[in-house]
Image (cartoon, rainbow, N blue to C red; front, top):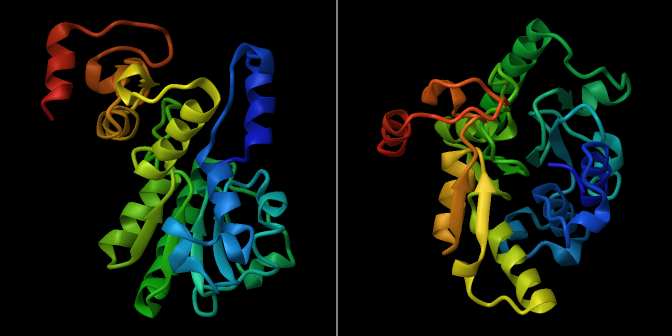
Length: 247
């Protein structure tokens, strides 16, 4: 859910300099571009046109920088006119704005914050607020299945809330990527594009729906289901992979 520049810096730290890839597209960047100006709130952002005061579920890292041109102030669940879910580590509303509270650091703090999110969503859903989710992932591949913004979106939907997702597996980000490939590299056939990721219900599903080929990284989010260690490059058995695919 970060902007392009933040992700480029992170890629560089991971050992992937800018000249090692052609472009980088993030759901956070597309969401920011779609929301930052009133005239740009079209398409999947049309429901948020005229809404100025979000209740922010943030990542606790670059929230203030990211939101500076999106909104001038925050609201509570009782006063905001929409919810912006871009992280699960910080709740920013009118009451917490002045304190600039720290992001959740421990599992206990994270659980308390998730409870606060649920309480806020319960109030907001009764008011009919719409939610914008800039990262549909449900869990983080950190060995602990830490919650991601997509989990907040799923919870809000279960409460009867209206949720707009930007990111995999939803088509907006794929349409944008395919348009870049068409304009910059002359690629017009989606079947010539391969989507690579570690999550069946975002990476692989989104690639399939966009008409792309796909490759699953087995030792990511689904590692425990496949009976292998996470992040070690282990290969699953054919039987465990087959069991995952038929779910």
